[in-house]
Structure formats: C-alpha cells, structure tokens
Amino acid sequence: HERIRLVVLGGAGVGKSAIIRRLLGQGFSERYRPTVEDLYSRECVLGTLTLKVDLLDTAGDLQFPAMRRLSIATAHAFLLVYATTSLPSFECIKRCFEEVREQRPDFQEVPIVVAGNKLDLATTRREVPIEDVSEWLFCELPKLRAKVMECSAKDDYNVKDIFRCFVTLSRIV
Ligand code: GDP
Ligand code: MG
Image (tube, rainbow, N blue to C red):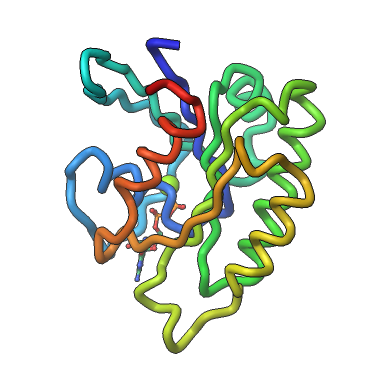
C-alpha cells in the first residue's frame, strides 16, 4: 500500500487522541475532549518512498456500532491502546481484538501494535504488567505481525516508535 489506513481502538480516556496529537506534532494537553471519530493524514518519507498514513481516531467503545464496524472492515492496520495504569482498559482491548477477529478473516495478516500508554504514571500506579500483554497477544497472533510497546503521550516517549513499528510490520521498507 502507498496509503495506509491505521485505525486506533481502545477504551475511553486511555490516550488514543493524545498519542495521535503527538504523532502530528501537536503537543500534549491535560484536557479531556471525548472523540466521536476523526480522520487525520500524515506523510511518512522512507528513503525514496512517500507513504500516506490515514489515522482514524475512534470513540473507543460500543457507542457507535455501525461506524465501528466500517472502521474495522476498512483498516490496513490497527493500533490498540490501553493504559498501563488501568486493568479494565486491558480487558477492553481484548474485546476490541475479538471484534477484529470476528470481522476480519485476514486478521493474522493485518499489522497490529498494542500500546500501553501513560507510562509516566506507571512507576506508582501500574496495573498492567507488560508480560501479561505479551503473553496474551502472542497466543493470538504471530509475532511477525504484532508488537507490544509501552509509551507516554505526555512525555513523548516511544510514540514515534509506534509509527516505525507499523512500517516494519507492514514490511514496506
Ligand atoms: P482517548 O479517550 O483515548 O482519546 O483519551 P485522550 O487522548 O483524550 O486522553 C484522556 C486523558 O488522559 C486526557 O486528560 C489526557 O491528557 C490524559 N493522557 C493521555 N495520555 C497520557 C499520558 O501518556 N500520560 C498522562 N499522565 N496522561 C495522559
Ligand atoms: Mg479520543
């Protein structure tokens, strides 16, 4: 693909929009504005290849089932976001993953990155060990197509690496 449609899923308040804002170079805000659905575009230059990435930010729960089904059906790749400080948010991405599995017979070929956000808060408030996430993910998917990483949209830690990961997983370079 020269154009990648990346769909971001995960529970409300985990930082999906904050991660996207970081990727777009828009900084960080403590304020919380709930999302319905927003589409952003960004160009990635990789050697001689210019890649267009469309990022679809979602509401992250079951409020808009029809929109959600369409997002999942048309995605080239998925970013599943949970918060390292919230066990329920990990349970939530497991349900998101089940939706993807049910709606996409090709789910094993679709690049998936699972991102544990709010790492800046995890030293004192961690509820999700990364080992538990890896164990779950790699039971479901081949390691070649999936990756787990922790990040902080607030500290701008590992956010750009999430993007790089998709590129590697899609084997574009
Ligand atoms: P969304 O519902 O998943 O899109 O979540 P938002 O991106 O709107 O973020 C929800 C709240 O968490 C906001 O108040 C953000 O400022 C905050 N937030 C997002 N990412 C981080 C992070 O990495 N660290 C901390 N401490 N707060 C974050
Ligand atoms: Mg949002």
